[in-house]
Image 1: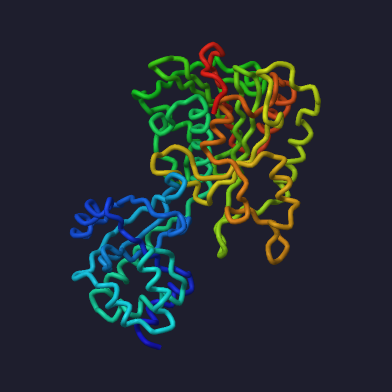
Image 2: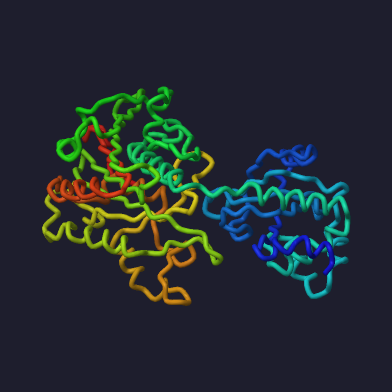
Length: 448
């Protein structure tokens, strides 16, 4: 076996395919300087959505500008950017000196691959495994290029870190708290610390980080237990619950109290639930977090017996009164209060540090997916991922529905929810309770 080919055996097995990125003129000015200095700093650029893989995996990237191969780097998906673009992060930029004209590079490739790779170098896209191997072979003929490839491949091996269950539980808790803040139009990026990726054996719930987090210009944090409703106090005594109130200092109108209750150690927590109660247009919404796992065919969530038990419990308390609409404020798109948020395996967030990437499903839709053949794998196991779940709510849409009263129970149906809260407190869940304190006189209306 050729030595260069042998070096890439591991890469082939793990399918670390190259991605080709066309550097647009608007990005060239900043990228040119960082490329000339072989900067390790991450540069974020917009790429056509169908030209870049929507995966968190970092890949070796070939940079093309003005018809030339100008550099190599590591590239990773960051977030959606508008309706047509992805935001990608380019890190560890390494220039090709001198740049290689694309036509000259293509002329050295074997005929079966030349046309397809020419299209990739012209438009940009993810190369398949065979195309990647062909490009690697050609680049590796130059000893300096081979050194760059080996360096970047080594960085790919070093960067990924498997987060502990405790770290991911903290990230879920942060996201639940952030969602509650966003629902009252507070900027969670400015109000919450960025520490959910700390790891270690003695991690505490995320809300404990707020004890030493100072107020800033976007939000003030103050203790206000008296604001929590009766149904919280009845289920959990004050000294066993971490709680705080967030408010907008400029208006004082956007306020939410948040409590965290958990009877188990963080490393034993099996999931996160957010129970949201809205004071104006009274009603409850419960979001249950489920985490996808990385598999060879992509990131998927596989339902288990615990989920079916949880759904059965939800179904037992879903409002069944057909006359639930008593006033205009009682109107909901659905009176069902339950939603599932399926999050990425690493519970990662966008670069603006707001909410974790994920998909929201109303309970009825999720049940329909569980019984659908469209979500069965080759061995008849149910798997839900982005590829087979096109119908879901995004973070932005869910927040709009939540804060404007389009979802949730109609009326203050405290008896059923009080029973559910008591049940959840007895399980190994991280329970976040958010109490939306906005005054009905201050709300801006229910338009989206």
